[in-house]
Picture 1 (cartoon, rainbow, N blue to C red):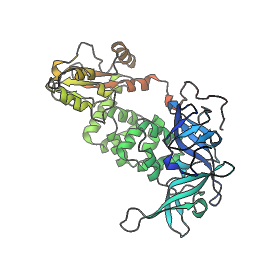
Picture 2: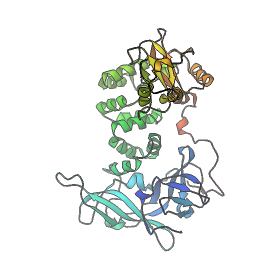
Picture 3: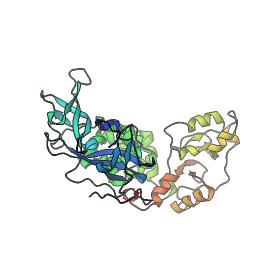
Picture 4: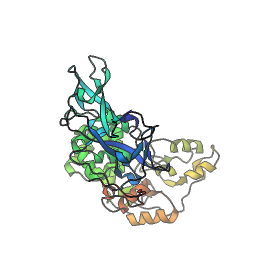
Length: 425
């Protein structure tokens, strides 16, 4: 193997790009598969888990890796695109060994925060070293760190008990919520819940929105009601309503009672609509502006990071009150129109309102047809009194148009194999 350091810490390569010999990116490294036999015998590195197009995770044997240098992985160009399925004898180093509680030679209880692997003269890879951090004493937050050989620590080959998620979450900090959700689904249930418990409310809310309903309900069920209500409050109202709709009525009512009253009111309103209607799909928190708002002020609202790209494509101009349901709806202002006008122009002067906007009872098919007809990725939903109730975005429409369980399916698309594939499982 050319240009590869003799010892590589996993935290330095996880998340980095994987390239074929021609220099084309084929995916990203998400984990390292090892065979743990005992606390004394160094685990052999079997291969890498690579995330390819469509968020599918596949197995790359170490025999197909030609370089691990300069923060990137280079392969022989051979990738089998069959979804990776972990075998009973395999361990995922990042997801199952990081944050494990172990005992060092002096009897100190410590936490694993990194692992290093080395290649022997026969070109086989092994986990050679374990980076650990002792528990802090008294008021210190962190204890001393040290790097020990695999055989010097005890507890890595035992059943997962008391495993935290601090260092695993650190590797997920730069990942999109959808990618974190995908990673969680690959974990054993026990490990998944350990990670969930340590996620912040806002981050967990973002991740929940990207998970199938089954996993959403499962995760919400392990949280105490108070925290579950806090997470629901952080979710988009339409997503929170969809999730609550999957729970027993008594449980849903308990959580609604614990949510912030204003947020609970929005969710309750959404729960009154049928699922496959404009009202059932809409969010109650679009960008709503008064007609005397300037272009400069409108663009500042659009730039707010918590607003999704689909919602940021247009603003909705209304009379007071500006919270949904609003005063009289005057029309929409497209993002492109905001960019074309002088900053001091008022948005009331450039509104579009020449479309028969959908009512809350409008069907999924009607909403999809309007989006396609007018080349829009979001639509306002108004009532019979011309009040804005919310907005439906293209992602919500697609969630309902795609086949049930679409998140669980392997995406169709071109293979990333360049020659004969390598099977796993």
